[in-house]
Amino acid sequence: MRFLISVIDDQTGGATPDEMAAIDAFNDRLVEEGHWVMAAGLADPSTATLIDNRGGAGISSDGPLVASREYVSGFWIIEAPSEQVALDLASEGSRHCNRRVELRALLGG
Image 1 (cartoon, rainbow, N blue to C red):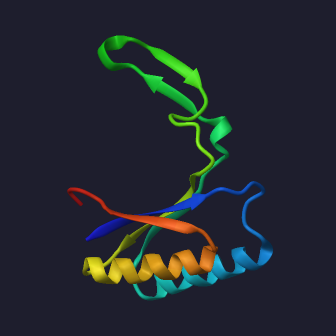
Image 2: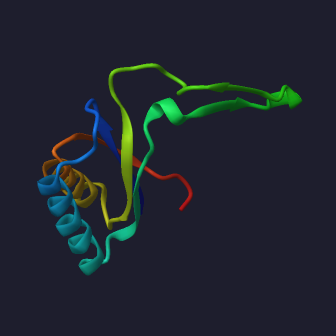
């Protein structure tokens, strides 16, 4: 089963050097244990463009979908044999990146 772990941030400036070292160590563990699919950080929400082309409307606007103090600053996609293993990994990811995370199962894959 595949899962998305979204990193929830309310800070600016990104991770500290110590947080990045902890994230790198966690990433290495995910790879070593066969859980790694991919991970990435996301640009600041102010760089987002919202696009709505339903029905050919062709509407776009600058900025995120929702203006909020908290935003998704990065993510992991992991492979786990069960939801419990995914929960344990998400908890460890939260500790390593020093941020709240949200765990969600990916559908159909």
